[in-house]
Length: 66
Image 1 (spheres, rainbow, N blue to C red):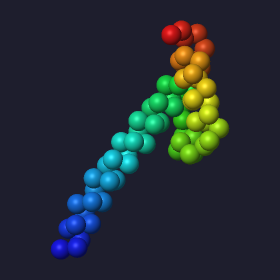
Image 2 (image 1 turned 90 degrees about the vertical axis):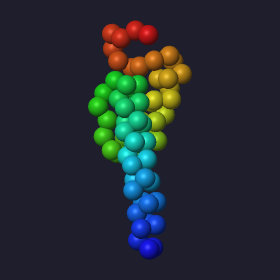
Image 3 (image 1 turned 30 degrees about the vertical axis):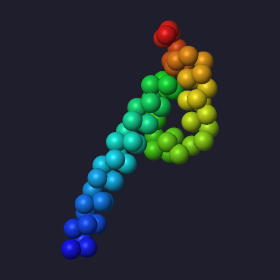
C-alpha cells in the first residue's frame, strides 16, 4: 500500500523535475548561444549571464539580431 503511494508521488515528481531541467537547459542554450552542461544549471554566474542577456534584449550569439 505505502509503496503504491510512494510511486504515485515519486514518478510524477521525477518527470516534472526532468521537464523543468530540460526547459532551463534549453533557455540557457538559446540565451548564451552555446551548449550548456549540468554544472551550468547550478552555476550562479551562468544564470547571471542569462539574466543579463535577456535584459539586453536577446541572445549573445554573434551575428544574430533580434
